Amino acid sequence: MLLVLVRVFENHLFYDPFTDYFKAEFSNLPYPEYNSFSLYFNWILRYFINGLLSLLILYVLFKEIAIVRFSAVLLLFFLAVLLLLLFVFLNCFDEDKKMTFFYIRRFVIHPLFLLLFIPAFFYQRKNS
Image (cartoon, rainbow, N blue to C red; front, side, top):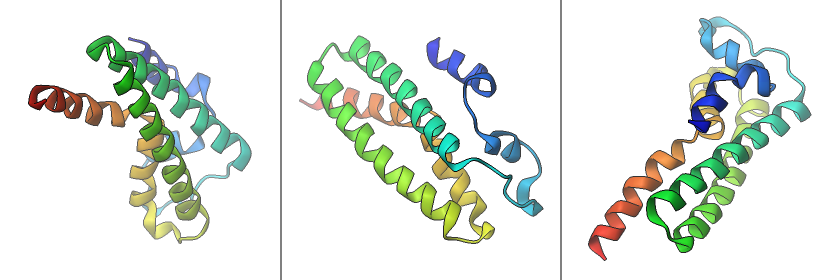
């Protein structure tokens, strides 16, 4: 329920001009103007909120601290990689890479890794 609330109130909680941009017909539009510091800060904040809620869900499902620790390390690693990719696609490539930027951004602002971790840990538990 908390993950749903983060999504429902995203426009009130987080600064992200790309939310409305990608809801529009963006294929022929230039990127919106944005404040880099606020944008990255809010992306990181949202990633951490989603990450903490994801870790809580993993603990409730599996009751194993080892899984939570491993997931936390993976989430931090993925955050570093994704932020680097976002920076590169936003600042170094032309806007013809909009869809790549769109999908990388989705991994930062949505708890998609949770959807990957849950079946992976269930599979691991079943086979061990």
